[in-house]
Image 1 (cartoon, rainbow, N blue to C red):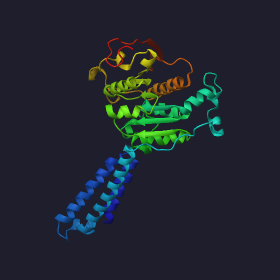
Image 2: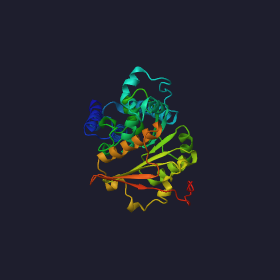
Image 3: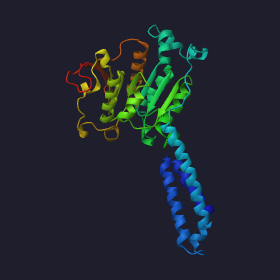
Image 4: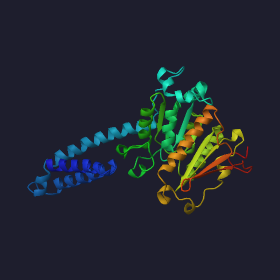
Length: 344
């Protein structure tokens, strides 16, 4: 019996030492447990394998039932946490505290932002879709900038392959839901903001209900189906959309808001390209710092839109070539036959 529990410990802690995901470690432990249980039922009492594993079939069944109950309880709590309304705490409403004034002093002294702009940031509600390469820096800078309410949507878990570029997640977060990992870091960056994690995959119904609670959306996703859904929902609800994209060494960024006479996302990309023409990061690769550059610029555009500072990338697309250090902008126009915005 001691040998088996020692084996469990080696699998768990040894796997953690080499960054094996928790799900894989639990899987190995479960297989060992099934093997031990099988030995207890198949082999006679005096058999050496039964003696080594020890405890008897009743004991190991009890262990299985106990851990099964604990796992079911925790799984139920996680399910409720992921599906229930996010945390009910809210950021301070009203005048800034002394700590906030000190924190945002470098914003407030900017002529283009000032106290009024920082107040707009505090009152803003921004939803970020994706807590990956683009979402990571965007979320961190939105929190640091003092955006009052920040929602983050993602249904994925942290994987070791993410850590090369998704800077909001750490090695200790491997196997954890990205939204909870991101929310933890954002609260550490700025305790004065409200963070609402949504661990789910967007569909038309959930997107419509969710977007209604926000006044600006940042799209950091990596597939066209979700991008088209986000764009469609934003246009229907009149919400500005900041969209970023990456491939290998190049990134692009634009702000879509048909209410301000700009095109929508589908005006520019009427149809998804063939799969072999638009490979994802896993297939084509991506330079690690690139998402930090584009994601930070997405946060910058959000701050400009909210505070009213400067000229956001409305009706323009910024393209950054990291390999050659070149940046260029192109003008964008609405498309009269667009099925989403109709060129309005």
